[in-house]
Image 1: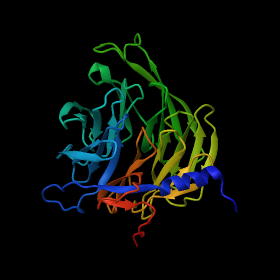
Image 2 (image 1 turned 135 degrees about the vertical axis):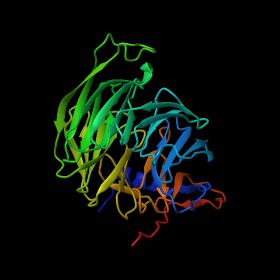
Image 3 (image 1 turned 90 degrees about the horizontal axis):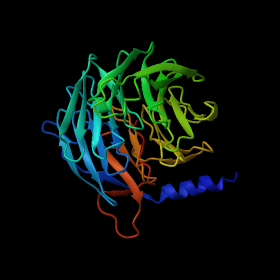
Length: 363
């Protein structure tokens, strides 16, 4: 059976990549394998990479053209481990975190300095998401309470509501702060519309009266089990949804109609991430299988990421760079972070591994 030329081209591209392990020292009282990576996040211009670990630390890395170096370690970033990170799209260095406590913390990515602490009425915040224009920040807690903050009003709460089901994920669409979508336990995908209600002053620095109204716009259905992850294409044409029945669905943002399904996964999906031009979606699983990259248009598998299975405490994490089609991912069962780039023709250093040599799966 002949292979689509574009799919073969993608497979050839990923075979050229080489893997590099980011080496850093474990915290006192830990070994290199006693803490695991929870999530990886990269800023919009690809110059800083942040990882959170189960030891409650954050590590901020500087991304150069050919290297990722100089980790800044923040110990005890929250009272519990950081579960969600979101970069301010209007800043190269500012990012927000939550960690199963009542606080939202804003950090300076260049120095690791804590810039702001927003104390909320919730006690178990687990999701944090800046809108695409950086004017709003949404946080979700374990009880599915949704808090919306106006960033330029010193993170004043401008709206809050409760969702009647468990929220696995939330993502903003590429329309400033007009729409966002949730992934719920029952498999449904509610889409909410945000309307400024006070003289459009949400985005005004120091504005005192700005508020928003958030209303349910529509609900997408089709998944028969929990929708666990959403990935919006950076170019805004489509989005993908992963579910626990082992299916990835593709949707048009223009029509909000399902326009494709990747159905050969057959494992519980823990996370999705779409690359910069919307060509590929990286799919991770909550058990022992390596993550897989699929071609969005054809739904064909183009690459299995070696040594990328989940850890004993955490799911695997993958994050594409926003400026190039390479990515960083949790490796060695979650105990290290690796990143890939095109292989050098010359001699590889000792921390570099050919990506195409697939590591055995854990039994």
